[in-house]
Length: 399
Image 1 (tube, rainbow, N blue to C red):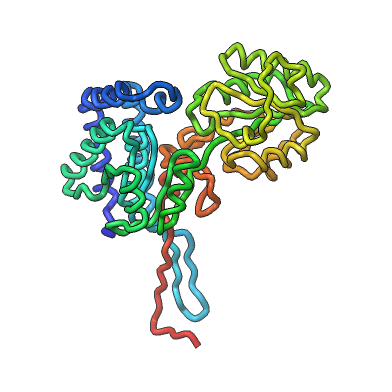
Image 2: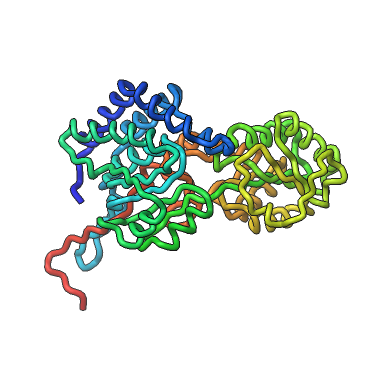
């Protein structure tokens, strides 16, 4: 793959910034067609689909942020000279061609492409049919930006495929394919893993937990839980499950306060047999499968646990490995929780809503990876490169 210099890449991004602004009404009009055709029964998916002036401004901001970041390609990771005289340098290098498969969100068409392109990768965008018109308008802006700077459209490609065609493409791609990022639910991830012939980096489900310890400060507990649950229900970093330690000196009052505040915010509460008798809800959890479920709705499940170790075991059993919170004033307990919880992000007395590239200082993100190779957490610009060894010799041979 041809390596582009930083000036050319940034020129394309500046053109994209200009087109997003000048073409914003056409982009919003295209999105309106998608919204009118969408079934609003799935409110979370509908929310992700919306493109308005504020969303276009966010897209422009994302491109500006990536344009301002250092080029991640060609950075020296390590450099050594061996006793035999070999000079070995390890540098960052592009993946090659990245495919992202995603549902609903047209802003992914911007964030995925800007990150992949600045990291010198080609990107194949397989968006959902519900955002077809929006994605076509945005990709048209990309293609104009590439053409204005003497580059071909193959750097950023939009794939219009149904499920069967996508399956065949994954099995037998018509071009080199180095990495696939499925950004969606369990069914999509399983589908890609089943059929792909190259590396798959999973942007997994949320299903995030909060553990309220016996010494938790309610002045922190309530705002954190409310924000994590209600700020954006369609986010994979939204809170779904709340575990209150039965050793809390005000166990029942704490449960009741959490339920009351969530109910006031419009959250539907379900509870298991360990706590339902002290709560107002009569929706009792009878199937443990609910603890695996990502709600993406104004819904929360509440239960109790007996001690920190029990909380850690429970969360590691059911969590999606995305983001989990401990609410405690005990630093040692917080450190133990954060060390032993197996997730991309762990929090002490703070909302899970911060698991986001922009909020974590990464900038625009391709996805939130819940895989452990090669990176876990927000996939920003620096994470969209691999590495290569440069070995300089003077006739050395291995003996």
